[in-house]
Figure 1: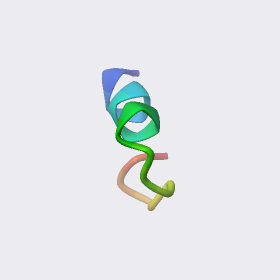
Figure 2: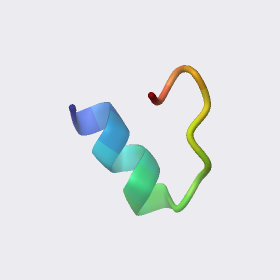
Figure 3: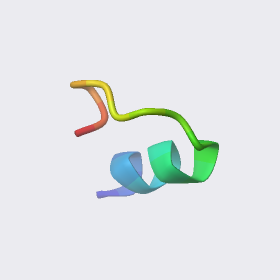
Figure 4: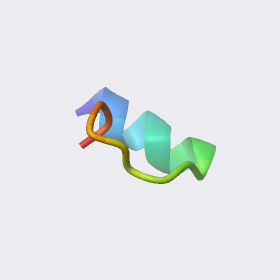
Length: 19
């Protein structure tokens, strides 16, 4: 979803909220 893409774009790790 867009949330997962945003986390990848931000270069942040994948916390439970992003998975």
